[in-house]
Image 1 (cartoon, rainbow over the protein chains, first blue to last red):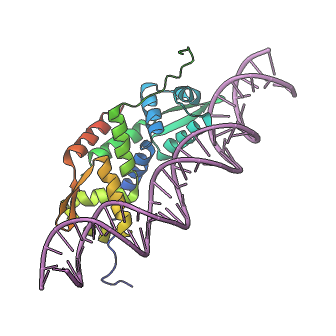
Image 2 (image 1 turned 90 degrees about the vertical axis):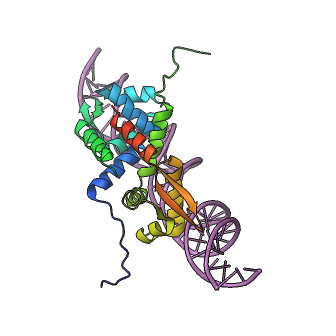
Image 3 (image 1 turned 180 degrees about the vertical axis):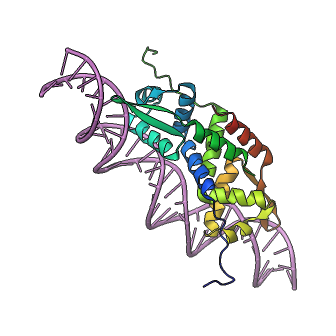
Length: 102
Length: 102
DNA sequence: CTGCATTATCGTATTTTTACGATAAAGGAA
DNA sequence: TTCCTTTATCGTAAAAATACGATAATGCAG
């Protein structure tokens, strides 16, 4: 039943939710570092990132998962290793969305 | 003592750290909603935002603090209330930084 | 002054995130 | 096959974030 007291919640659109998720993914120093490293070293392996961060392998793997789930990066299995790279379309889309904020 | 095994950590610059903090601030649905509300309703009061979100006043106040500390919004005391608005310079700077990613 | 309205902060419970060691899974080399 | 390398996942401990009610603190009206 609809009353005059219904709360007009400021809902986010699906796009805004996706942007929020990407923001959250990049809103952690370690993940921002990974993102930047990938932007400077395309096509690198998990081990490369582990070497460069002061974190355990399991932790880096977890951060990579968050970035993967946000869509900003993607990893393809390359033999026994996993090759990670930025997802260019997603990054471009993200930048467009942020540019359109306001 | 310095050895050849020193870890070359991928440090973030001060700017990148600030961007990361802003990303974190916007990486929560409630805060993204507040941000969007402020972009559509400049110069509004805490109570206005509380009315629009399905959250308690204390919680909204806490989210406003996070946004304030990120620099994206600023609040000025207006009588017994606080008037919030987006910090245009910070938002512009943030968008530039994101646009320059990669 | 007293009361009302507005908002920040405090204290706290719950949930989520973060980080790590240990383990599993999977590919390649010998 | 047996090793070695590489990485994801599991289990878990510690830290941080989230949400709320209760309580200040502040300004204004009467």
